[in-house]
Image (cartoon, rainbow, N blue to C red):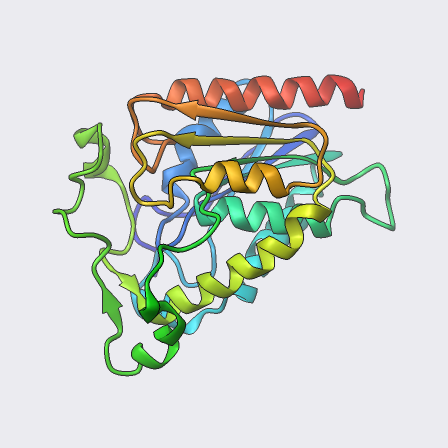
Length: 264
């Protein structure tokens, strides 16, 4: 059973499709406000639910990073049914998945007119914090299944406390899934030089959940010549639900419109 309000969503629009991907332990709901905004600009928007998410933490433990990539690729092919070109937009781990997917689906061999046109990656980590336990996460998970998300009380790092109240995510990090996330990051490192489409990176200066130089390191590794970074102030990690979300949504829209015009 999917957690109420955390279901995937689809908003029909024009022939430009936007595929929204949520983050690690999160749910499509953290992308829904952004989806509604983009749909008001005329775009067709699909918010996918990653395998093992928005149901029970036990389901996430059973999922693998390849399942999460498959969830995004499934969403891409579903959206291709209504869209001629597709932008991938991801938050946190959703940004990793979007960048890896873009490196693989930049051109569809059977139809070169339909492809990933660009990527927006928000609050995306380049690496996990330095912790020697991470290399043993798979083994540790056999007897300690979950770990706290931080040392502070839940929601303490959110700027918008009311938004946090409606936020949906698993309360703890499944340790087995942390091992999968570490593997996924290694895949991203190999994939970044192969990304040739335009990319917009956004990151909050106050994001203490992700290693601080992540956006700069992703930017430096990208193979694209059309790449930009945008720092967001006054927000935490989930910038799609924080006080500056309208600026985030508009920046993404401006990026999509610019790339769309060049494509036309």
